[in-house]
Image (cartoon, rainbow, N blue to C red; front, top):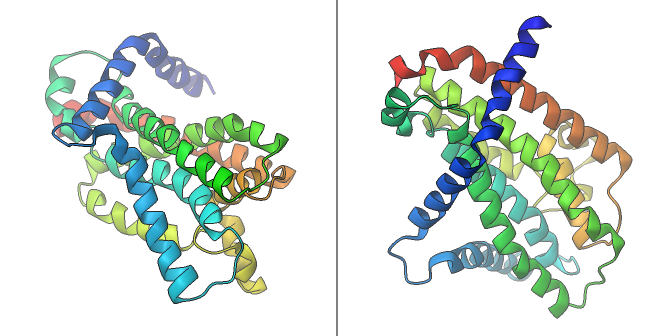
Length: 264
């Protein structure tokens, strides 16, 4: 317990680097779109193109019968893009900043945090597409949408924990960088984003329950499409898993970070 207290206290130092974090986030966002004609508009275009592709395949080609399928798809896809992009990019965040780590004394947890925050900004920039779609399709929006910031906060904790894990583990095991995209892809298809959880046979739904992102996807779909408050069970699961992943990330990063200057 004494050791965990000191680890958490040491980790909390990153909150004293707020200005640096936002400077790095701004730099990352600018670098991401540097040299492009549309710039930040790609944060709108990318999810829109992906949504139109899935709508074409599932609603037109495969004739999936589901009202407002595009809203269902986008409300689950946007938070997934935030999470998956964070994990993919954060996995290389320590290795790619090896020069800085060796020269400047600063909390190294900042590097994966930058990707959590920058992808959060992309996520927030893309929300107007979803809101416009709700307006065009005349989908009723009510009080449950006020829970959106709560879901974002819980997912932030979850994503940061995952980013800490992958960014530290990949320093020790470089092959993990190439494994992560495959894990993310499989995870995506096992999450009810393209399909409602009701189409999954009853005997297999336990896997949806064990999939932590299923609860996030369904909760976002609930507040945006179905105008209902996510279940207490969903909130309990999301909060519990997010805190557990975050603490695991803090402990893993703390255990491995002393070797980073030698490894990178």
